Length: 137
Image: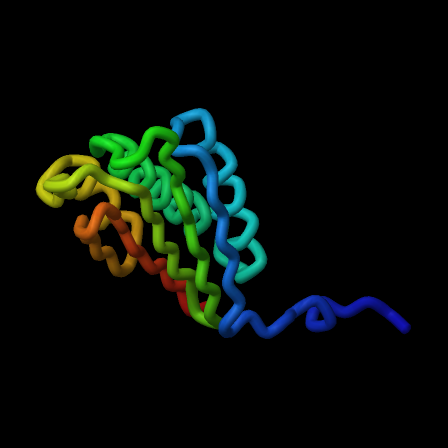
């Protein structure tokens, strides 16, 4: 039997990957690599993959900049794959009263790279959710 590209195309609707790393800048490379790998699986273009990696990196950096609510905080990334894109929800414990800097330059960069962006900080957790849709070809 000959190999065909369509043999490797799996339905991804509903596939979820969750990654938890220490909330330290050194671990952002792991998150960026996971982001790129999952986006490649969804057949994003090279430019779309780079945009998504930059958006996830900015989201993580914004959360790492908040005062932590735990002695050994962690950063959790949930990747929800769907046939036309990827939704990434990044969460970290945050001290009471922490607020996301939604008017900062970093937030503007984040919203430029992702299709949809939303953020919250409540109940001891700060969360940023972003979705990147694959361009129609």
